[in-house]
Amino acid sequence: MDLLILIIIFTAVGGVLSVMAAAIFLLLPDHRRNAVLPHGISFAIGALLAVAFWGLIPEAFSEIKPERFQSLSGTILAGVLGFFVLEKLLIWRHCHSGSCEAHGDEEEHDHDHGHSHSHSSAKSAGALIILGDSIHNFVDGVLIAAAFLTDVQLGIVTSLAVAAHEIPQEVGDFAILLHSGYSKSKALFYNMFASLTTVLGGVLAYFGLEDLHDSLPYFLALAASSFIYIAVADLIPSLHKKTDMKTSLQQIALIAMGVLLICSLHGIAHSMEV
Image 1 (cartoon, helix red, strand yellow):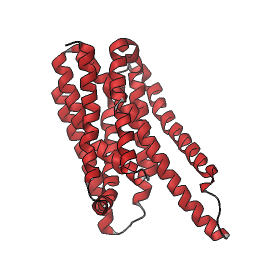
Image 2 (cartoon, helix red, strand yellow):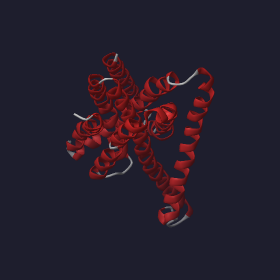
Image 3 (cartoon, one colour):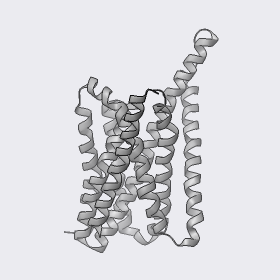
Image 4 (cartoon, helix red, strand yellow):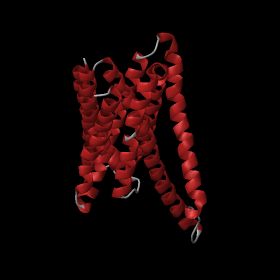
């Protein structure tokens, strides 16, 4: 079979299969999903941070020469600051669309503005997770194509490893999108749309891998910076709303589970690729 067709098929498998597996989360009854959702946010924090610090950043630095380390670190810093500015613009646009208008006295205005800001922040977190996931999936497509261009069997194994690696993260993404106010159908649509960038990355890599190879570490760095920003700026603060010991221990345990699962799957995928 033509190598390009194989790359298209297996990048689609690597992206879409993980989304469909994670979409099983949407089949839960509403009351159970609402009970599970806060736990999913804690798990997502651990998964996002693990993907960034255990996977994306080390991989980015392994792809460049030492003299370019500072520029790559600068890209991560610029990414974090850039996502801060982007979220500010999204919140500003939301507020100026009329939903932040005051109603009633000043105290009600403060309450409404705080509620609207919180809702705006949640919505912008959803937009950022879609953007970050699209970048990450694009890079996955490039990596799958590179494996196929090296060896077809290696490409097949790599695509399956990517799918397995993505499933827990996609579950976290669904949790974030639902937490951000997206409907189940919209959360599925946007996650599926983001997964298609895996195919785009694979096709572009097939036609110009040498050109993309120099830019690959910077794609990885931007994806990492988006996940770090979402976890630290948007998700972690929501966990501090409940301070009782039981809930706090559950949050810590679930964050640790997210980290351990991603690190374990990353190790398995790496051993399979080798």
